[in-house]
Image (cartoon, rainbow, N blue to C red):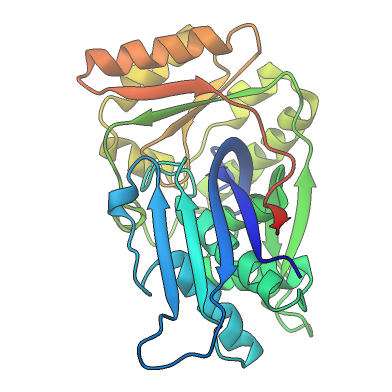
Length: 317
């Protein structure tokens, strides 16, 4: 067996307009993790975990057993009914924290995949995914983080033998649709973003989102910009969260004027996701950055691609 394993996990953008809590895509932005067993017998002075973090915002990541990567690692062994082995974890940050790009999902996926490798891989990928969803609480980030691509996730029917499990559907993403990611210099916690949501919606709004999600899936598959312009509208979460994101309406107007099919909130925000054609993507990125700057907000804005691989594992000697 190799002495360590490196795991690369992509950022994710969830919801994508009307796909609230069920649709997500992996992006070409990454966190990297390395797991190495600490050999020897545990004793009173030995460490159960050693964690080292590098990269942007490294000083904000916990390096004790409360670290989310290690929490997922320990959760895996509790599921197996085994004690967690001592482990050295190295984390290289590439995804900003608390920005709506699935940084917590990368930690959960890496912790579970790393634990599964150290245990000799007794669980299949689908089983690891079920654990990841259970830990995260919803499937839209951890699913594409593990599997890659764009994924639609639905819970299986209540009353069946596998109730509570999840059905995963790959969603084709046309090559002529470029995701433009705009990461502002402020944070928005998922808890705060959920607190502003109503507990119920009208029948009319539910029908609106069902129709627009169906159109979005076809728009992503075909690359039809006219469908995407309509499909990215939403009534379940974005109207309530926009007020939490400074300059949202101004930035949205600038993006659309520059040629974007639409601009939506990535996950719980505050990162925004624009969809554009390859010819317009750079101009859309510039327009977003300038519009936000005029509102006193600095932002990192860049065209990315959809990552098709998901979590990648590389054994090292």
